[in-house]
Amino acid sequence: MTVGTALVQGTRLLEEAQIAAPRLTVEVLLGFAMRVERAWLYAHPERELSEIEWLHYGRYLHERLQGKPTQYITHRQEFYGREFRVTPDVLIPRPETEHVVETALRLAPQARRILDVGTGSGAIAVTLQIETGAAVWATDLSPAALAVAVFNAERLGARVSVAACDLMTAVASGSMDLIVSNPPYVPAAQREGLQKEIRDWEPHLALFAGESGFDIYDRIREDAPRVLRPGGWLILELGFGCLEHVRGLLSSWPEVRVEPDLSGIPRVIAARL
Image 1 (tube, rainbow, N blue to C red):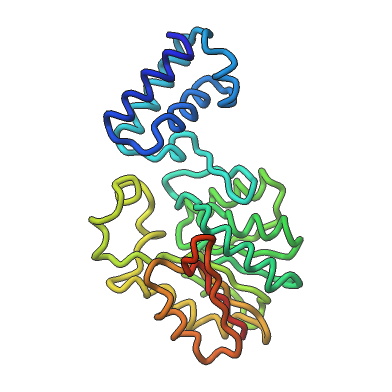
Image 2: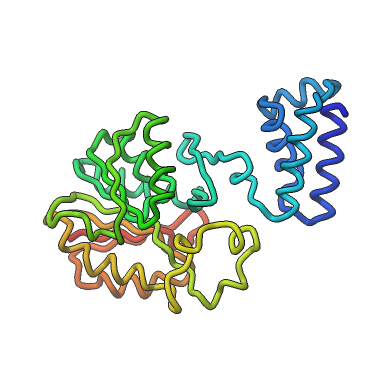
């Protein structure tokens, strides 16, 4: 089978299965199987796949047809211009979460001690450490997720300290200039309505936050004043429909800002202690 044929046949399979972005997905999977960049595929359409490349490509297509996200097949996801390792132990970093980083860099550029709560892959923590040079800590309840975060920090040259704990319970009082988090915010009742790639593959610990979806927001807000230094910032990603509840939680803080994404959707809330 040639590269050109593999692209055509793979695209047809994914189209018939109604997999999103079939052509792009096939290019990524074939490039991963052959250990080449996507552009290389179009420069060498006549190249014959080796037996091992064909076997890997077929397996990756089968996994994607079963609903496994492409990022969990390739173990790769770009975030803020850097490539992060991802596994089913961590949430796949979304482009929307880059707004948390951008807001932190704009509002708290002088923060020297930063905490990422529920770090998962470490995307936020690693990015902020590299961009600011600050001392960064990251927590997660999942040791498996922290292992991924440590791998990403070491590979990308970021100095991030990690702690396995429930939210901020292991963090000293008055120790942080900035707290950031992309917390779980999906109500448990909405589980069946999620895309199967999310519902069946991404870690539920990183997705669901009780019946209302507000449980983790409530707990972070409750403990943040203990951990933050005076004048410190709390910056949270907002889930759909969460704005009014979270803004209400922060109504007593002297400064609160809501940051929309490019579509005008409230994406991040920032509050200063």
